[in-house]
Amino acid sequence: MSERTEYVPPRVWTWEKASGGTFASINRPVAGPTHEKTLPVGTHPFQLYSMGTPNGVKVTAMFEELLALGYQDAEYDAWLIRIGEGDQFGSGFVEINPNAKIPALVDHSTTPPIRVFESGAILLYLAERFGEFLPGSLAGRTETLNWLFWQMGSAPFLGGGFGHFYAYAPEKLEYPIDRYAMEAKRQLDVLDRRLAETRFLAGDTYTIADIANWPWYGQLALGRLYDAGEFLQVQEYAHVQRWAREIDARPAVQRGRMVNRTFGDPALQLHERHHASDVQTKTQDKRQARV
Image 1 (cartoon, rainbow, N blue to C red):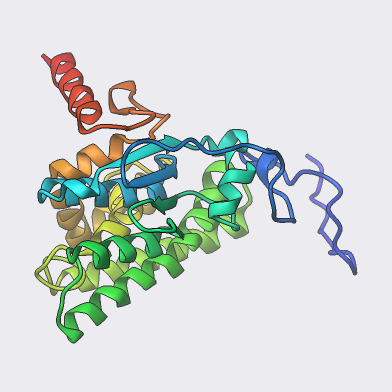
Image 2: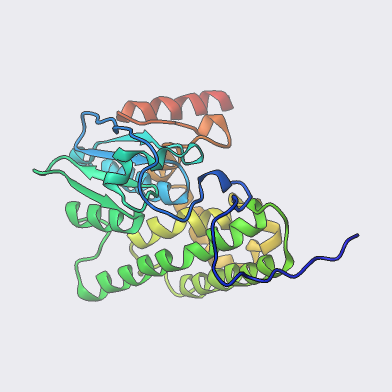
């Protein structure tokens, strides 16, 4: 076995080769579009361009929750953006989100239409637009936003940190895996301590704080992210487990989890969603398959 040579950073970094790993083909040190591509536009007020990753699930779950409350003007078209194929670098998508990351939303109910990018911003926009899942009191609103912004700041360490080095990097390296596993467990402990005090993150009411955090930390606790449940001993976090299972049982969350999904169980994949019947049909197919 050859000894590993210590990497010495050059004085000036240059992009000379792909970094390796699962997403090497789409990683680059510059912004902007790579090709011309106009985005499709459906018939509903909201046009969502996304993929069923945790960040994408936040928004589709939010839409399905709003529809479940009877807000018919929350109807949406969900167009699939295949991030592994670089769809997010098309000119139409970059015009909506200069950061070229899913999800991105356009609200066509206004003139001119409003673009919204970053998943947390989309949740906040929809919550304010419909007056749901965001408490009206100063204290309740502030606590909800505390946990919404906590998620936006913390999840990159879980995904781009732990998830990358544990599941996607071209080789397993002890230092980064150990470093980010420690941080992932610290974050789970933060949530577990909070959820020992309250039913949901902002208190006794289900809010956008839960909708934002569940696709990452709830699904991690349920063993659905990075095949890392045993490695991180997620069962230790009893309060996170309780919270994760309760939200997982919500029909709107189950529907939202299907939308723009291209991986895993085919019965849970609905690549695009353009009408409520699309989700209903997929759900019925799933139930019939179990019989």
